[in-house]
Amino acid sequence: MKEKACFLDRDGTLNVEVSYLHEPEKLKLEKYVSEALKLLQDNGFKLIVITNQAGVARGMYEEKDIALVHEKMQEFLKEYGVQIDGFYYCPHHPDFSGKCECRKPGTALLRQAAEDFNIDLSRSYMIGDRLSDIQAGENACCKKSFLVKTGYGIETAASHADYPFNIVENLFEAAEKIISDTE
Ligand SMILES: [Mg+2]
Ligand SMILES: [Zn+2]
Image (cartoon, rainbow, N blue to C red):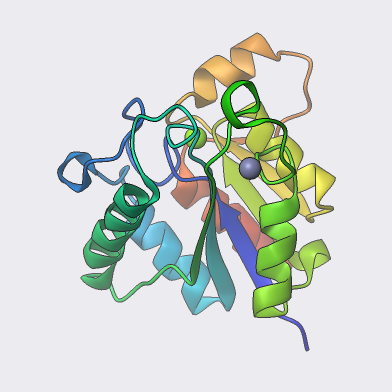
């Protein structure tokens, strides 16, 4: 039996949005994120972060800084008995490093994770605060994608008013909906 996963955008979804976050000391989780991830993990979901980190292509920080931020996030979550199974990031930006397939809404990172963890994409979900997150989930044929109102979520919903988003308050509400969707 293949695994099911929740693909999670990072900035504005898991942690409070900070422009080009790369200092671990500036990392702050959004409310109820630990609880949400615990609920998903306890229900058998792999937790996979999928994040665009164009700050690398822009020369604002390095890949090792990304690793430090992710380490810090694991530390916070460990207190709740949760851990992220995989972190996947796109360090590119089309204007600086050319086109790539991993930058969301591209699906290369989701497909790589699916291969690494034997994940069934059609039983998996994507959660994020930007249209590109939602489209990445749809492009990868995930079961459903949820737009959280944290981060840029409210702005995203307002600027794409005709888009049929599944809008939730935050990651915890997304987690609840996902659990009831799979029951
Ligand atoms: Mg985001
Ligand atoms: Zn990329």
